[in-house]
Image (cartoon, one colour):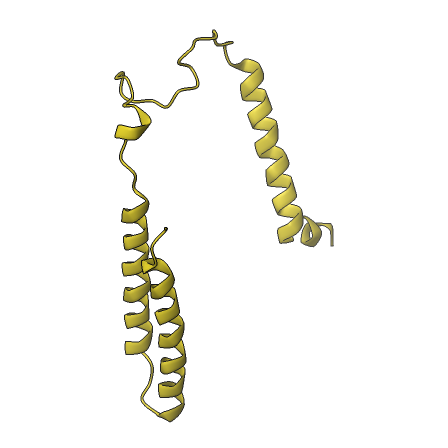
Length: 111
């Protein structure tokens, strides 16, 4: 009875979260104290100075394009594996309408 309770997912999650938090606090207590330095909280750039913000690359467009291709490939996979028949054709059309809306949202300008 008590073994079933301990192995239930919510209780196991709480136990592992408590264990992880305990290890985190123990590691913080055992770690050497760091010295304050002006660049301590700056992003790591392999020892080089970072470019000014206006010269840094923005990857928003790349990630939107990657998400667009992922959505389209997933749609192709789902539609191509549907069994033949009238009901699956209606399901495919409904699915493709949803994909069309997703593509419209992803290709819409940020302006």
